[in-house]
Image (cartoon, rainbow over all chains, first blue to last red; front, side):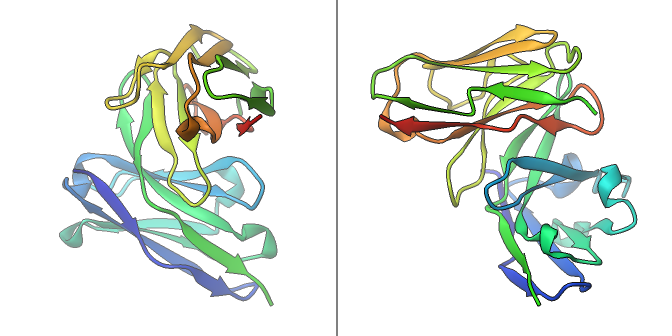
Length: 120
Length: 107
C-alpha cells in the first residue's frame, strides 16, 4: 500500500528556511513524480512545484522561483521541499503528493501534511 | 494561469440529499479535471480523475462529468462521512490550479 509520510511541524522566524521531507513506502520513489501543494489557514490548495525524483528535473510555480528547492535522496525513497526567505504568508500546511500521469495528471496519494508556522 | 471557479463556495445539506458542485475553468481544460475531498487535519483524497473516472475504492455515489470549461461533481445520496470540502483541479496546463473549494456542511 502506498504511503507518503512527512516530517513533523516546524516553527521558523521570518527570513529563515524550512526543509520538509516526504518518505515514500509501498513503492519506489523514482517511479512517480512528486508535487508539493500548500494550504494556508482558511485558504484553498496551492500548487508549489513538481519533481521527477529519478531525473532530478523540477518545475516551480513562478511565485516561488528563487525561494523553492526540491531534492530527492532515492536511496531512502525520500523527497524534500526547502523554502527559503520565509515570511508570515508562508504559514501553511504543506503536502507532498504522488502524481500519476494519465490523460493529464492527478494527485493519487498524499502525505499527511506538515504545518509550518512563520512567526517572530 | 487557468482560473478555476467553484460554486457554491459552501452549502448545507442533509443526509440522503443529492448534491451538485460545479467547477468552471477560465479556458478549456479538455477533460483534464480532477476532484478531491478534503477533511480538516487529513490528507486530501482523490475522488474523480480525468473528469469522470472514479478512483479505485471511492463509493459509486460520487460521479463527475463535463469537458471544456464546465464540470460537475455529484454526490447522489449524502452520508455522514461526505461532509467535507471538495476541490476541483486542472492539469491541462502548468501551473496546475485548484478551485477555491466547496464546503459541504450538515444542515
